[in-house]
Amino acid sequence: MAEELSNDHPMNAASTPLALPSETADGGADAAWAARLAARDPEALREVIAAHAARLHRIAWRMTGDTAEAEDIVQEALLRLWDQAPRIAERHPPGSRVAAGLRLGGWLQRVATNLAIDRLRRARRLAEGEVPERADEAPLADATVAARQEGALARALIAALPERQRAAIVLTYYEELPNAEAAAALDMNIKAFESLLHRARAALRQVLAAREGGE
Image (tube, rainbow, N blue to C red; front, side, top):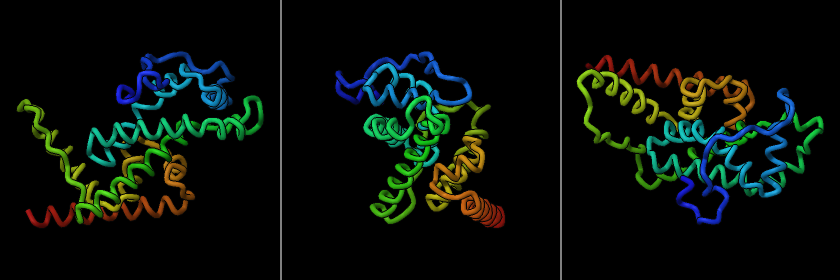
């Protein structure tokens, strides 16, 4: 991801995990990160990448089924954080009451989820159909074939869902986010999110029942 950027960009630095900001454990660490990002501290960006990039990539990959798309989404989400850090830091000055409530992980999850939804909708319009699953061309050992097939089926079923329902399933069941955090990632209140999740589960059950009935 970082290699695609210019050599002088701070995201091109090594992504070795570094120490977290030295704020209190119960709040304010992300505000300290935001302040350092706003000051254009490349080490702070490396720390954010080490802490959050893997989860963002999982979310984006499970949403799109495409490794290259997922990498692009992660990079764009992190670049948006870099660009918007001054505004975020201004609203959450370290040491203030609101600083403890800042969650950069949640902010990044919301951005990455929305980016994935936008890309899925654009691909659906262009293809006039569902986003295809990428074929796995790697040779499979006999002992793993069944598990891989089950995983591919689950991905295919989830890929058939509308974009926001797909996001609800990915955030809740794959990333195991609490409903409140998943709702925040989709810019929804908790009641609306639970209704969306209920519809997504019902749609999956319906597809599974139809598939089993046709076998």
